[in-house]
Length: 387
Image 1: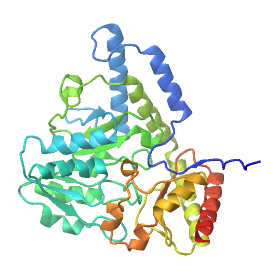
Image 2: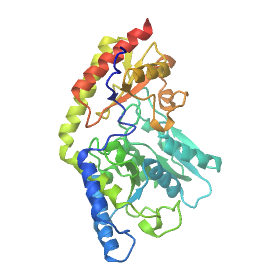
Image 3: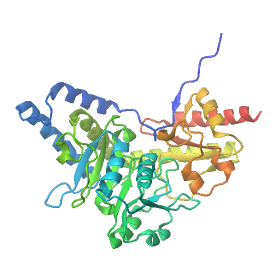
Image 4: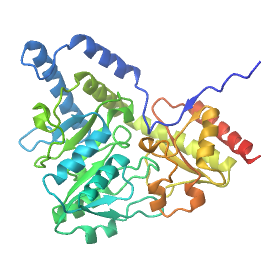
């Protein structure tokens, strides 16, 4: 009789996270009680609009935006982090036909690809370097901020290594030169505290499915006084910045997930950090050639990028999948690519490290037993492949 397949263990929460039961329940209630389109003028529509705007304000408050007063910031709901990043990049450069912009060497494809399209249109792109720890080289930035520089993009936490970036320092330099800064905070919001106003950025993006909310909704926080050029057309919703019917249900799901994190934030951070440390200790003890990328830099508590030197990452990924371990070879949006990670290349790591690196990421549903069992299976796979 064939052996039963191993119980699967999900260690790819940076790609997406499972919705928590409370999120599902709040969305179900919203589905059954709010039938109106929030753009409609009748009572059903007005009820939906009130709920949507209450949710919008609370989400802004939880990420440190100023949501009241004449200088209030704004929240634009999008279909996810990719759309939010595209709206920021294309919207902030606005009507300018060409100019200069700065992008970090660590950006998610939804930022770097959008910038690549601008480069094809005649924009000059400067790239901010990164050191071997995975931290952006802020000292390079002043020489790149020229009179014609319109925008800087620097993510808040890296999706592959989990390394936190000095965005407040970058924002201060940008403010001195009158240049706007966009930060992608998709891997940070709902994982550690984020204060939009304190960061000093013009715009900040995030997505609900990264912190146990629903797939299909993201948000762009826009600082008071910052203007965006719309990228979609056909309606007046959200001041015309993102036309189309807003989903009250998805917005409720996003808020519920964010509030759950807010109530449990200290306990979650401690638990995720402990799980990550236990995981890395077990792997590095059992496989001495293993290397934790970014270990010497400040990191998000839920992300571990480990190079299992001596193996090919694609072969190892397949073997781990067969062993019931779900992980990643890089950004989920670049899944399937055989090319090495641009971020790890930019860090100047050895080819043997880059070619053997895998990302493991944990979430609110990850257990200590799963971490211990996954460590055992990973080491067993390494031994089997070595033989």
